[in-house]
Image (cartoon, rainbow, N blue to C red):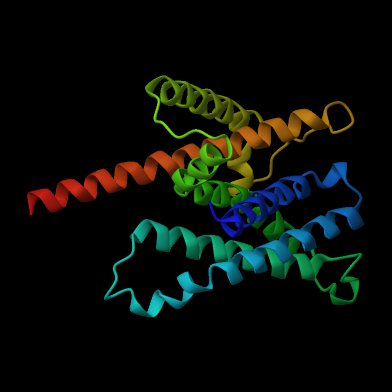
Length: 228
């Protein structure tokens, strides 16, 4: 296993983790929130540097077809992160306070981009889950396929997805994704850990959707080719 691949995966998971930490704005002070966000964006820059060959291959997509789902998701994620970065600078009050020109609209768009960022980033990870599991298997010294292990992992995935659905409803994430005012707010003074567990479950749900959604799309594509 390439140590470089392992480093890339660690940095990618760290970036997603920092995004989730930054979501707990009322648990952090503003400066810490901005420091966490800045670190996350630094990791995103590294991520795109590491994946510069993928970006460089885009002009040749006609000769080397790419899955449409991957293209759409990656561009959507990139657009969401750009929106998050721009609104971060507009409403910054600590690290980049000299750029502050934003108001309530910029703040609302910042929150909107943040929640969509968590969902889309998790789907992105889910679509690359075979690579992630392959690295995990090598680190654990697993060299043989096991049907029992596969069943256990699928049960765990189903459990995470179910908890993700309940957390999605409980935190009223739909309202935040649609920029609809909501009265649901988390009390970090009582249970900060619970917020991260629920947000992690929501990310897990999105990853499951990304993983199995890609499998379904690939199966449909294979059927179309066979029928052609």
